[in-house]
Amino acid sequence: MTRITIPLYEEVPFIPDSQAVYWVDTAILPLGDPEEQRPVVVMAVPATTAGTVRVATRSSTERWGIPHPRAEELGLSKDGWFSRRANVLCELWTLGNVRSTGTLDDDTFAAVCARFL
Image (tube, rainbow, N blue to C red):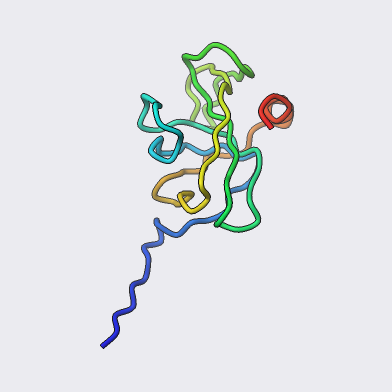
């Protein structure tokens, strides 16, 4: 008898929304992040989940990059800066690894893209 394995909903990759802010598990980011989770904004998305998602990470301690005030509605309780670019395999973009909190304002998003894309 053949068993069919159905992946858990939390493990199914999806293509994120551009300009959306997500809190991500730092295990899917490049090595070296001291936090367990980090807010990012999605700058570019692939055509399929086999591609790469380009994000800018936000920090409240790195005081360089594109400044961004606290935004409780996005889960950002401190002033911060979008300070680094990262590429994430879309295959790792799952509900178990990321949580959407909303959309970044147009002006900040344009500045982040101009700096990091």
